[in-house]
Image (cartoon, rainbow, N blue to C red; front, side, top):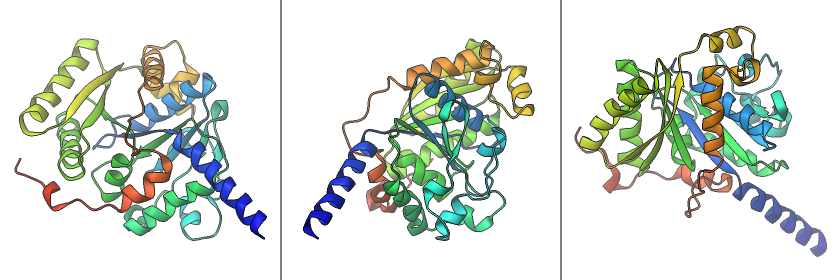
Length: 295
């Protein structure tokens, strides 16, 4: 009996060690239609082609579309995990180059309105995974719901995808403001997507930083300018991702470069972002000193 308990404890510790070495990147955007999911899957495929063990969590729990974009089908998704009908490992799909996909639920209102305890239950399910994961990419929903904020503040890196539209810039600013002021997330990596030139991407970044530098204590870094490229649309129609379908296209090259850069991003010294800390961070409420202030 004692030997069995010691074995179980040792196995648990080994799983935690594996999870603690996982790089967690949340990809978000504030607004829908900015190409966030395409950025997420392009990064995943590019990293997997380099031999990394990559998992994508479709955290748009009401309007999930990661599996659809890849032409994958599954009879089970995260709603079945939360309902206790199966384990997380039972819903994982395998995408291109061995990328593991955890599909969300589409058209399910309850999944879009999870309580903090349900969020925690979802993330706790990761503790039972036997997979050795190098990178977890979390593709969030649009907007600034509790669910989006929870996944963003629990990650090591927050990647904000923005396009050159007033609503995209405004919504990205709103997301950064809430994360910065209420959850003490201070560093954001910006992807200028669907731009006509590198200069347009820089100008877009300048528009965003002009307002954040005035009102927020947040550090923004432009990490990629992804050109407007019709090959992206063509790939989507084929239910493929541009880095796989058209790897030499301008958008694919920019996204591959972003993926290479992301693999070099240092892991923060603090524990936030490792999978085993997700539950703790998801349940942490803002302190009285972290309430919104003004603009």
